[in-house]
Amino acid sequence: MLDGLRTYRMISVMWIRSTMAYRASFAMTTLGNFTATAFDFVAILLMFSRVDALGGYTLPEIAFLYGLSSVAFGLADLCLGSMERLGRRVRDGTLDTLLVRPAPVLAQMAADQFGLRRLGRVTQGTMVLVYALATVDIDWTALKLLLMPVMILSGAGIFAAVFVAGAAFQFVAQDASEVQNAFTYGGTTLLQYPPTVFATELVRGVTFVLPLSFVNWLPATYVLGRPIPLGLPQWVAFLSPLVAAGCCALAGLAWRAGLRSYRSTGS
Amino acid sequence: MDSGRLYLAVGVGGFRRYATYRAATAAGIFTNTVFGLILVYTYTALWDQRPQLGGYDLAQAVTYVWVGQSLFKTLANGGGGVEGELMERIRTGDIAVDLYRPADLQLWWLAADLGRSVFELLARGVPPFVLGALMFDLALPTDATTWLAFLVAVVLAMLVSFGIRYLMALSAFWLLDGTGVAQMVMFVGWFCSGMILPLNVFPGLLGEVVRALPWSALLQAPADVLLGQADALGTYAFQLLWAVLLLAAGRLVQGMATRRVVVQGG
Image (cartoon, rainbow over all chains, first blue to last red; front, side, top):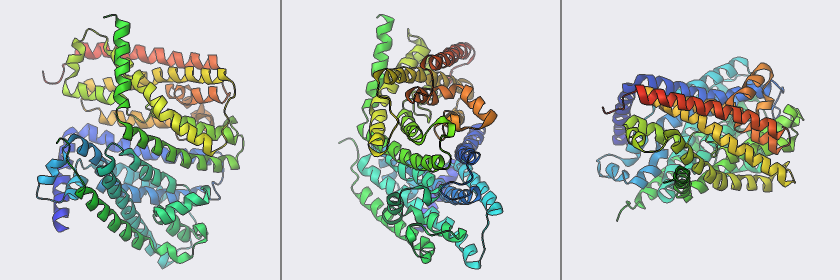
């Protein structure tokens, strides 16, 4: 574990220095990352230029959901976003290089091409979250305040598990790396809107099958004082850290199974 | 070799190249369908609040979602066309080989990209649309003429899309690492083509501006022809105007680039 973190730190620092060789491009890609996600939010603002509420939620409330989902996803993407390259490495055989190095493959893979530009997304999400906190009407209690950082870290943990599990799936599927996008980018987009917008089966699916709703829907509806989706009891709002730990453990097992089943290309 | 046949061969090559990755195609269909679902639910909430928003009824808005997901890869307004490879060739200096060929650079890449677009339309466009039609009530035309008119608009959209991406790729002659520009163009294109929200929902002056930009020729134009919201001939004229302007600009920049810029590597 410590070995892995050390590897991760060294490789990512190396990539940061390499990125800084093309400073103009770094500035543009970071701005690009920022803008990309900003456009998502602009679209929501445009919707609210025509309506007062979406699925019964007001703009500050949706901004709250949006900010939480974006920051949690952005943190996971910053740390593990490179995992989606695994399929390509399996295809062209360069994964073998990682296997012969005396360092954990997961850490090497996660730090590969470490993109500091991904801070653009985290920054944008944070700005929306700050806007939401300034405008939304919440009866703050100590418990709700405590839930805020817990929610963001657990959310990042859940998305991190999705990234690792998606990469593990690519050992089998290879070219099918895009499936992962449906759960990562698709997941964060889904969570930016209130659960009341979606069909009950869909909400059930992302609660009991792929527990994305623990990223923000369940804890955030509690903080906002809104009904918890699916009529679940209030205490589920506090389960996010447990769910995140469970997801990460399962993703770790999937990763091991995937790595063990790996057969190099060629012979 | 007769030049028409040359470009046809390049186009067929582009088609076959993208057809090689079957698992990737299946994965893409899945992803587009998931995004389509998310959008359908948000649009439903939006149109529930404001029926007839942007002149669409709910069924038309839902149809628009599936047209968008189906044309997403074809028009490459999220990137992923041949421009990535072209930029890489400029960065590495391989472009010198392309310039030596007894073929026109722009037409060569246009042919390759059209081949790719046709493949994406058939393989990545049709399945999400059919899935969408099975799951939701769509406002689809019943007469063959409207479908044909829609297809013509899609082909014109392919030309406009290439025009934009070719210009963007040529910027690599000056910038070398074009990743930043590519990303910016991709996101602006995504937003301004109406992938997130139909352009006729954009309010006031902003709406008028985005509807006049070339990106509105990509998704909004064919969708409106299919939904019977726009006159086909007027739409074609708008698309053609942008296609000609962009391709001409591409030619001009290409001339400047090949004359002035020293290819990397000497």
